[in-house]
Image 1: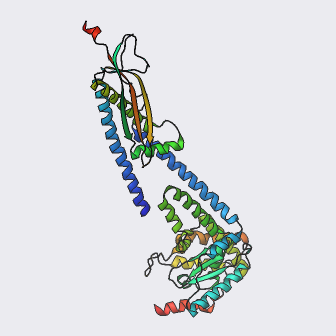
Image 2: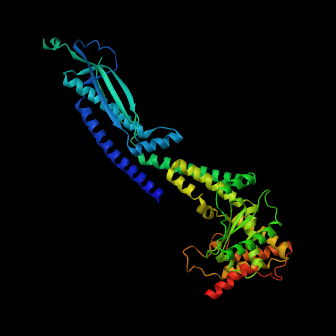
Image 3: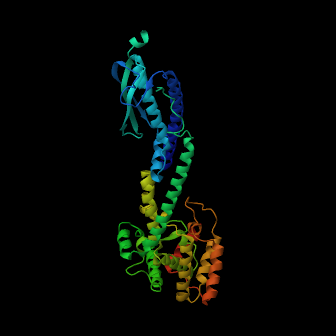
Length: 154
Length: 290
């Protein structure tokens, strides 16, 4: 009887994790895609120094960070996956969402301060363990540039 | 140089396939793996346990009151008669070295007898009340002793412990359930022997019966008595035909007795010995009461 109750609780957690996790994930993806279109005018690059054509007037650091948590369902599936090995699909979407979100927040930071270009973009990840589902933080940081405006004005 | 940012490509870094599909595969694989592990461990433990020296089983059995002492004088006399019969039959069987058979008697209406750890076997009043002759009683006794000889209780315990350990790794609750079944009450119900074990016990019992009485008529009497039992018990909610439920079909067993007798040149019929007085009195008392 106790075992049955335990099983019912487990099934409920799994179902909640799956349904809520899926809705949240789909909404997040929709929001990410919309904002990626919105922020298309802010360019972000990995190279360390500005391209030759750009003569920056002002240079400053911008950051974007996000903390996301896996749900009960993802954690359970990942646990099973650890038994057999292979591609951890459950966490791939989670981490992809985190990276894209961090980049968007980075661009938002840059645009608010008047920059349209970020160079030397880097990502860092920290895992926050504990609890029944792991969480991760993804940090994106880079160097925002505001180009010399006199060139265009003349 | 043209500076541009493209939209992130979809479906390369993360798969958008429905996670339920992966879950189904993983869950099915895990369950299959678990079943295989439990089955393999149960099989191995069942094989190994009877091969361990008997003294370990005896030491384990000391911790349980497996054959409680009878409370009344009448019950003590019944117990003594059962013990005497057990000793006589055990002398004809090659019991594991060091095993001392102890017969317990319980004044309960269930038609049952069982063999358990440490050379213990327990008889219920309900069963004794159904028997007409010592021959029939000896068939049950020899059957239980044969379980002890083949160390079937140890095999069943080994299997139970192995399954319990695996289950407790998954859920503490399932493990506790299995461990609880190993407690005193569980030692009775846990030991369901399989068909093969029952068949082996029957065969050994027939051999002992033929040697002791010169014929196997007691076995026929016993199975006939079982066939006459009502299907549903009236006074207790414990199944009255417990002994039948866990054993091969009565008709098959009667056929097997004939088969065995023919093969081994044993007589099917002969003079029956009367039940010892205290055991015979159970039946008389029961008839007077009803």
